Image (cartoon, rainbow, N blue to C red; front, side):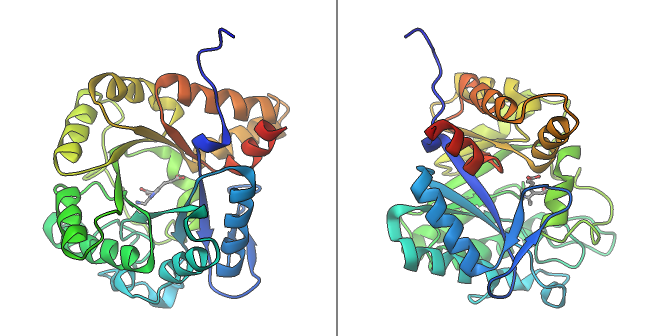
Length: 310
Ligand code: PBG
């Protein structure tokens, strides 16, 4: 009766990794219990999400190496892995499940950076924004419900919003990765999308310094002004203070991404006998809600929903 925070499957967004083929499941070594699925498997996971009461999945492609290039042009191919998965899920399930798609070039570039780089390897903001607009429209054309730019370029939310309107996608939402930190917690994700071996250097010229908090509020304010429907803080647990500040300062839904390294940390702790897996999962996810999140992206989504559904 006096519990202040209720966690439910409706609070969860389930990130899924797509791979080529048919009937393929590829376990990801650094994310024990998480696999890449071919498009048919993604459609099955979407059915599982619906049955569990999870309202949304987030899709990330592992692009075949031959299709990666300096400029990440595959991101704008209407028949790329991402678009085929979106269409298959929407054909099978329609509005019963939301599809959130990541906008950033890293799964498509031969250098693993989120944008187009100059000869010194430095990401070029404006050239990248133009490519991200094409990528976002490509995903919206395929049926994506929520476009989630994770690239952290300046001005991309406004550009994507204008392009969505001009292309008739007035109901497509934008969830901006507004406060995304240059974090050490993204390692297993880069394995999952196949960019870790390619990535040279780091992403510190466009992702945020973990030491900064006021800067997160400025980023959120800009993205809201440019037309974001919701904002995200990422990683999750080490940044709950940022979630709370955003929640207290802005009247917009805030989400958090419990990222791959956080998932791996919980699994490693449980495997080492340092904590009870189910309890760790539910406690951490409840903490996100307590901090003010409207929802959480988590690789534990299906497991947590099963626990919550009893
Ligand atoms: C791509 C992107 C990343 C994540 C989500 N989108 C990796 C990165 O920025 O290098 C990380 C998610 C995770 O670690 O689970 N821009």
